[in-house]
Amino acid sequence: MTNPGPNPMDMLKQVQQMQASMQAAHDELAQTTVDATVGGGVVRATMTGEGDLVAIKIDPSVVDPDDIETLEDLVVAAVVEVSRMAHELQARKLGAVTGGLDLGSLGGMLGGLGLGGAGGALEP
Image (cartoon, rainbow, N blue to C red; front, side):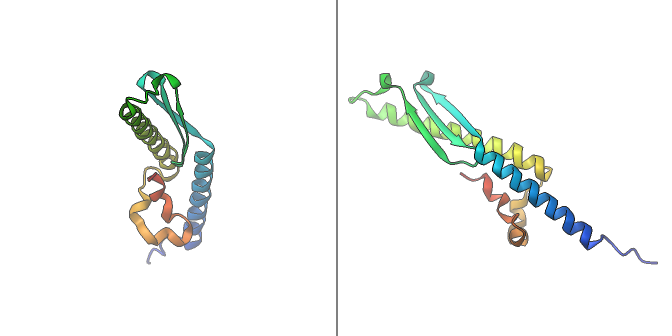
């Protein structure tokens, strides 16, 4: 007697549950912000958990018209750091849903199910 294999309806139900969990994780990421400060706190960058830069705060003490380059470097450093923090948050939230499975590597196969973008969600 042959084994009929996995029940397609059970598999579909599991995929739908994962899709709902992924949507909930994305919604949570959209509502979460992370902050990074550099230069002893003189520049702060704020980003959503989805990777959208929403604010840059600059302490007036660091604004020197004769040294714009330092301010530019501080802004870049703050954005790089907050982006790294947002990526870590995404990996934790989405990894919890997928059990560490890299859905991005499955490419278009899951695209029609609304899951194909999960791997790309880790990009800023």
